Length: 568
Image 1 (tube, rainbow, N blue to C red):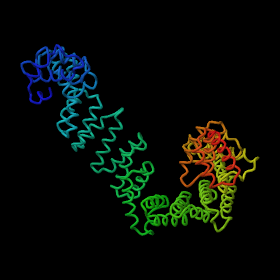
Image 2 (image 1 turned 30 degrees about the vertical axis):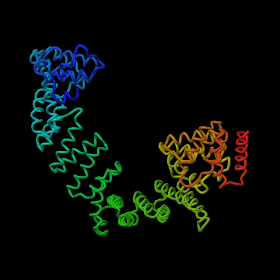
Image 3 (image 1 turned 120 degrees about the vertical axis):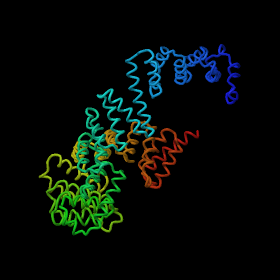
Image 4 (image 1 turned 60 degrees about the horizontal axis):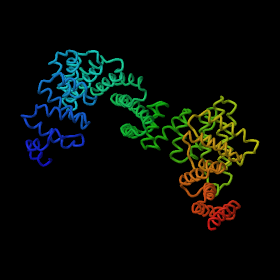
């Protein structure tokens, strides 16, 4: 059949295929028969073709195509009643496009169905306007849209389409006229149209007006934020433009345009003498400038601005914190700590700075390698400094600030040994209360729950430790230690398979070597399940850390017994 069709031998195909013998499983034969009849002028309008098309529709073969073909035949044979019935019965995906509504118009006119005719004309104009718009023919599209808007002036969607097309045509006055008539659900779209028009016509005052109105509806709208920055640049207000780009980058850190614009403006400022900047801008403005310059790569320059102007001449809380942050990023936490310590007399009554001072101190304690340190007492020095500072400010703190301070004090003591050996058993409830209070204060930080899991493990309460592990994971706190606690818990419950899974996940997460306790827990579970290969592998790792320990000896003895039983 395919060869005959390629040769356009329609008569031969028609003669070869008998309609009376066609069934649902002969879809290809029916297809070629239909194609042949469509191409034979003398048979195109025969009842045979209509019956075949109906048959294919009933069989469910390419329904939309055959419904379309049948509609065309019915229209050609002036069977308008049947054609309209078929058109209105089409599924939703078939009831669209200019071609569909054009056919509906023909039927409605012929049958004097005025209500259907009005609807079909409107939808035809709409469909044609969309197709013309997509083809880039905006002038022609607007002629049809004007017809629709005239017919149905209350339909805001059509007016919005009209305004959008005016914008694409560069007819700014018409855009504003139509956009200002939009309200209700289209207020946001109206503002976007007016904002874009103001931008296209370089009207910074109008840009700011519409952008602020849009931000009142959508607080983090990227178009409006960029528009405010652009308006500031148009007004040669470099500082305000920088401020807006910093706002964008805080909300959308990967916004390439905001990053490039911020770097460009910062580069312009970096070419000016430092004294000129200090004389031109106040303290708050200098803070903004220094942030932008730092993010643009002019770190030393940024540090000089904020350090000299904001910390020496007119100390401010935000300035001190920003300078410490710059120091930490450039030179490490110890430099940030030392900087704040140097200016301690300026901020001791400011809890926010005190807490940052404590956090930097805790990081320093955590990062010091005690084995290589030239001064074995150095970690204790930083711990004592942190504790002294927090104790000194504690009486003046409100309830929430006291919770933070107590949490930081626990952390400073914990990081000295990275466990809770510093606590006496009778101190456990107090430490637990401090961590629980902080966990209740901060809604996203999983660290306090991790510490509570460690605390409960130190108290040999593995079930309670597991509960805190689950709470930590709910706050997206993941680390090998949490898997260790879970593995230990499941071993305690004799759920060996789950213990192996948790231990394996933790081992895979620990990328800097081996966390031997995970291997111990997995070895226990693997031995219980008779997985001697896995247990032996873990035992080899354990032997490199604890070859002569009682734990290693016990694990090896248990494994040897399992292997011996298997051999027998």
